[in-house]
Amino acid sequence: MPIHPKIASDDAIPRRRLPRSQSTTMASNFSSVPVLDYSQTTSAELKPQFISELRHALIHVGFLYLSNVPVETAELVSYIPKLFALPQDAKDKISMRNSKHFLGYTTLGAEFTKGRTDWREQFDIATPHVCRAVEGRGDPDYWSLWGASQWPDEALLPGFKATMERYLLQVQDLSYAFVRLMAEAFGLPADGLSQFYDTDERMQHRGKIVRYPQTEEGGQGVGPHYDAGFLTFLLQASDHRGLQVQNLSGEWIDVPPIPNTFVVNIGRALEFATQGLARATSHRVISPSSSDGSTGPRYSVPFFQNIGLDVKLTEHVIEFPEEILKLRDERGALAATDSVNFTEFDREPSGRVNLIGRVKSHPDVAERHYPALFKQVFPNGLPAQVSAY
Image (cartoon, rainbow, N blue to C red; front, side, top):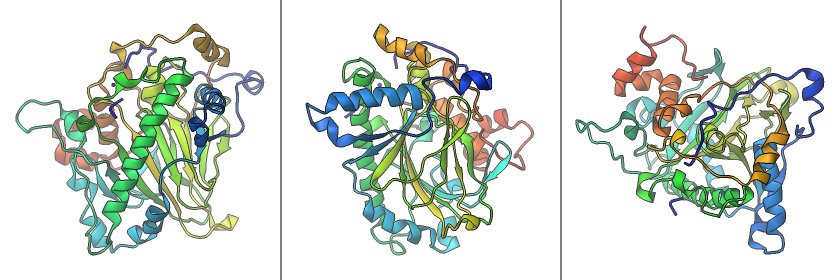
């Protein structure tokens, strides 16, 4: 189901630091992330309650747990330790450096956030897609951002590809259904956000499988950041704590794993598109620590729902009901956060914003596949340290 922006430019929704006494007394601040029961959406009696709770979570928190979702996770979770236990040469064979789509394996500690090492190892794998960019035709460079995934040798991990693709397509279906519910929560028709998406064959959504190894004292698994797209659906695939979100007064709130749930959060594109009605919330991951009794690594599987590559958010304006906009205004000013990424939505197509973010995160890939853009972003050549944020 293809579901394409009507937006006004608020230049990335300004966030200012509030005095401590004011920010901590705001009625709309939060100290925990709400849990919503997706099964309520199939009940005419219970769906209004779900929509009301969803509206609050979107406007005031930017994060929520979603329980009872129609997605099979057990088989994928069983593969994750085996995926990371592959021989290093098998992982390196599908290095992200080989892919102009920024899909593939990234070794431990290869990324930085705010100048500090992100202590994680990961595989970027996306929904099936045929890249529509044709070399020499003058297509936008960001069309090449989407394309085929790289997969480990089937003989080394039999059945993994089929399991991962099935999982990604199930979450894709969930994400489209969730967008329709989100539109209702904003007082729009169920298809009121469909203009943000392209046709099925022109859409791709990105997933990751991430390993955060245990360290002696914890530390930065991934530093404070926002996600770029509309929505993220996160499967916390082990029982390790570590995910934290930043509330309206800048305090870090734990989002511990809850069995049989997804964590859903708002991306910068959706915040911008809704004129700040939905709020993107700064978040980070703290590595598991042996000092607190943790054993083994933390595993997670985020799914990033994209919007159309050519969508320019400033070219569209969504007309929300006045009573919905009033809820946003009553929330008050947002505190400054530790995240600063994805500020280009006021002037660039979605695909270009995402490509710039990928270039900053993975300059070695960009130098190989996007030399012109690489030179713009890194005029002094390959940096010693890479940091998207």
